[in-house]
Length: 584
Image 1 (cartoon, rainbow, N blue to C red):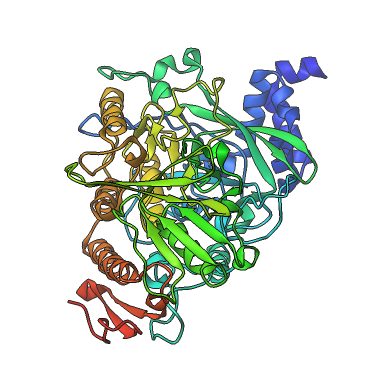
Image 2: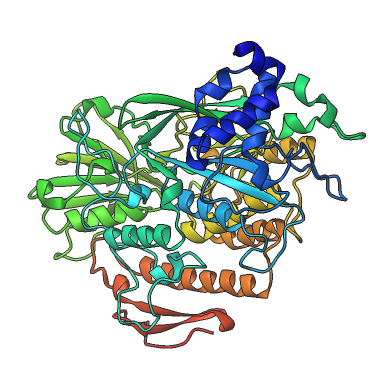
């Protein structure tokens, strides 16, 4: 039998296909049976199962400015998410993470499976995507899926806490193609984490994404796969690299937690969408070992009840620090909020137990905590000491974590704990050497969902050669740009390593540039981005007007988008300076 299979491979493949139903053929091509067959038989069998998609071939496209496009490879596994498009090339896409970024990315690829995108732009070449999302948990939503389960060591391991409400309005947070609310002010603009999770579930249902998600799957290892011997014929005259070197396939190994079985699969493109709120960042604090009380990170915080009657120090005064200090202040004896931008101790009235403190400097041998303030010109230095603190909570953010990338991953990659810098990355999105690997959602201090949507559309555009899109530059240009970004310290001058991926007010131009590369920038997109900026600036102004521990009134404001005017309407507000008005 084996001799016949080797001698007459296409006859063997035809017999196999005839004996099996379409569903069985799918299963047959997905198993290790085919991979164990001789190569000629394997190729013939697989090509037989893909006849309905048309014959595929190796191809690459280089734009007029010699931007490098990915090698197109033929794939074989059928999927209900793939349209029956004659002559289309099938590409296998792996997405790590089923949170907001992973959902937006899956949606971008599946939307592109139509001959025409929803925005009316056509593909230059027919490509269909088989999309697989690997999600560790058993539901979509990522960090927005709240639970109070503990780890084995008894510590809470998810950043979401019980009473959290967003610090951005839902009219700003929403995906562009999935508006949130009726815009009539009937519902609050600032929503709970449960409402965000429900919105993401509705998004996944609306766009039929669940069938592409494998829940309970932990990605264990990622490895770049490229065999130059098989692809030397793809080198283009005058090109500075082999296409397979620039756009290699990537192998993933993962464990299915439902049966504890290990799986491995090779993809044409991998999008890492695992977020950056998983690995707590604990900045070094000199003498911390001398502190006699309890020390935790904000990831362990859930409710204020356990801090009743205690004196608490929150180190870090950004979003989570300010919110946690306000919550704990409702039951604590005293809450100190250490803010590196604060130059003096500030109290806000007898009824407010939250006190602002400058940067936390050290802990002395007796357990006293020292705070230090220095004017930028060095003209004034001052120090304070606290000796009554019971608990220190580090509200100091999170480090990027990619536990599935290591020294065996066959790619240049650097992610040093404490630096919050990933390198080499081109345009905060693509691996500079291997753009078949992308990092959706890497920038921080941004409006996340709209950013994910634009980034994922740009990733797809490089694989379908969308009309109007701009191809990535050459390898050498990408590497130089990535290195410059990694050493720039972010957009603010002088910068810090930790701000490499900080965008803040710079996110709008970034979104415009990425949209242009994706070929989707037009007047409607500009109206969308400009309206987001207007809402962001307004909500930020209201948020900054709240004193630490004060009434949380900014979250009572209700907005309505007015995209044609690149503006918004305030439908309700309890902030004195924010009377109902239209911003122009």
